[in-house]
Image (cartoon, rainbow, N blue to C red):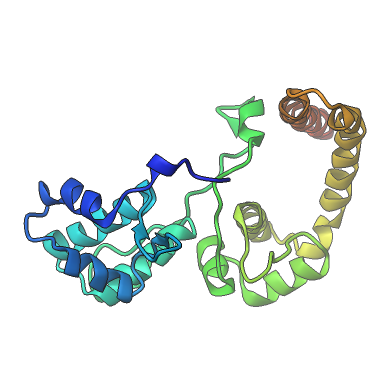
Length: 242
């Protein structure tokens, strides 16, 4: 999406906005941080730098980390990469990036199934080792889950949904349940997705401006209702065992 022209800041405007908090900041310092890969402003056709509000906040983080935590640029750069991928960065030099992810909300909150919990979550990107550490899975468990289609890698990283599945499976495995036992969950989920797709496809084919928004709303509502129904059926089945 194009950014309006005045959404960009010149390097002089960035300097002006930062100088009150960081009196020692200079244009040379900003250029140096760019050369080190900590920021990546766009350029005009004539070569002038164009900074966005995101560039400004990254600069503010870098300068504060140097001043308040005495972090070297290498650690700050690693932290920025972690935050870009939805992870919690390390707080001190010499420590590794924590793989405490900003988890998407689960399907229930205090027992209530909320449609808002099925809204698209913030992007999370985990390397394989990070997914294993964050979830508690072993590598062999992950291989098995991938072979059954319960978890899939997207490009080079695993996303928030993969982490939710991984954490749930890791906890279930404590009861002696293996990935091969969980294929029925994937089959049932695929069927539920298919039902939702049947409902929203006609909405997506409409040309009205609010059709997409309506389709997203219906998707969230149906997702919440399907989870509620599934939980009710499981509860009813378990009650018959007593």
